Amino acid sequence: MGILANAARLLALTGKQMKNRLHDKDIRDPLFDFLEETYGKIRILEEKTIGRSRADVVMVTPNALYGIEIKSDADTYARLERQVKDYNAYYDYNYVAVGASHGLHVEEHVPGWWGIITAERTESGVDFYILRRPGRNPGADWKKKISILWRPELAHIQELNGLPKYKEKSKRFVAGKILEKVPEHVLQAQLCEELFERDYTLIQTEILEYKRMNGRR
Image 1 (spheres, rainbow, N blue to C red):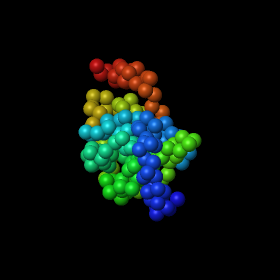
Image 2: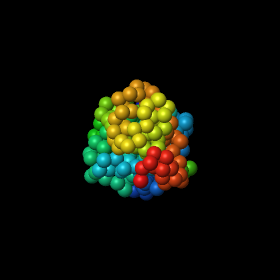
Image 3: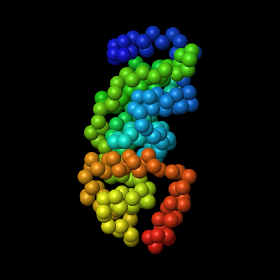
């Protein structure tokens, strides 16, 4: 659907917006299904701290990280300016997913490279439309992006690339060495794979085991 046609559709919804207001909980699970249908192999991570903000959704694909901010019909743009700055530091691409009441004005509140997904309630559930696809984020900071990984995940990347273990060094030091030694296109795929394989049920066990094996308390 073209941008003008989508805008006309959104304008036609004005009279029934209050009746069909969508809240965050109404959008999330259907959105995940929509993203899987659109992108194929993905992993969804929710509520991740980024700077002074919290990313509602992080979508991992085999070669990129997508940050997704949800603005339901009950939300305002009050915090969005700060959130945009934080998302831009961490992710390769970014989307804002909005209820229909925001559809006509959300473009004014996000950079031109952000994608926009609109959501509306229908008789069969919630429908999603891509109003604008995202462009590559020009401000993504590799130091921020690699900080997403846990120490055992960094250790695995060190192993994959034949790097020293740097047992007594800090996580920041190790991350810096990886950025220095591993080509970005290789690291991009490896970072995404680590996030695909991440098991939150084993995190404490993995970290304690890593510290034990490396003589750290």
